[in-house]
Length: 229
Image 1 (cartoon, rainbow, N blue to C red):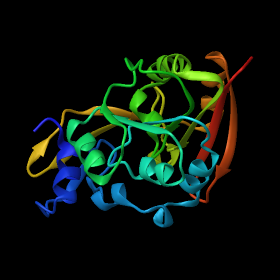
Image 2: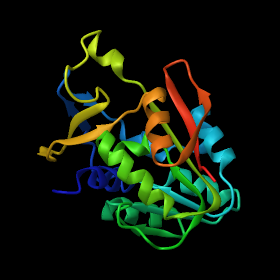
Image 3: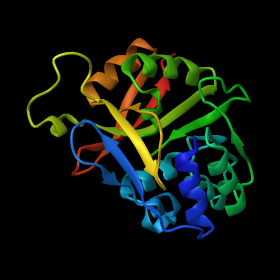
Image 4: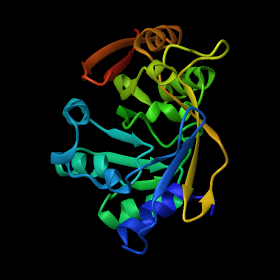
């Protein structure tokens, strides 16, 4: 079972299984990832995501769209939104839920048009994996932006996970995870969390202006990137 997250979404949507989705990490015990969080209505989304939806404009590409909840909310608002995910089963779920433009795609090679808004929620930039990967991702996103377009994303500083003992090498926001579902596991993979200062520096190096739109009580923030003219 290689598409483990997609299988969990598919089974949950079709009520085929009550198995739990677990996330293993290298800093503590495994944690349950509630699958229903991917199926929230707009009213159940946190303020950070609600603001992100409000800030979307023009044509939108929802990157790493999961079960398509954000894309559906944008469709309901009348926006032209395309949703992509690397998981074939997740894309099936999106289509079955009513996302009209959903496709299996890897953002690092995606080249199907340009957009006014690129949306990466639920720490979507984490798919970059590493700070080097983030620099590559920002360069790729630039190829998908219309003139004056924006990138909207959320992230957070996870230094608190280390309780004051930050790693001596590497960036502390490069976190190794492994999904487990129905006694099947993925390979270990990196997911990236960015503190605001480091994010601002990397964005500037890639030619973007970095603006924080909202920061919540948990240290999560919503930000906008706009290409520097």
